[in-house]
Image (cartoon, rainbow, N blue to C red; front, top):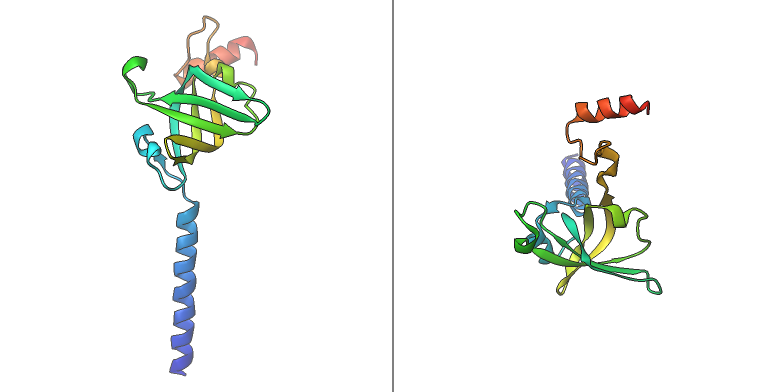
Length: 146
């Protein structure tokens, strides 16, 4: 009987280890631009788009652009990273202020598998100012009757 318990215990431990490693492989952590430049596994990084460095090749569905650190005091002193994204360019890419990218670094370029575009126009008031306060946003929406 003890052999059955030992074999059963070993099977349970193997499945727990297998499940934990499978879960670890599916987790994707947010990192800084500097960490994303050297990432060997898939990570998520957020940055502001440098529209001076955008290049789209329609034949290859290849979008090349650069992002910079959104926390930097000014654009000229910010840390930059070159990005390549293969796929359909989101319709509001040209209106976006920042993007969240999921991918990994290959040589000196971050290859994005997924791209989430952050567009501030949804949260702007009539005067063009962004409404960061949720109460201000709700009041502006209710005033418009939306």
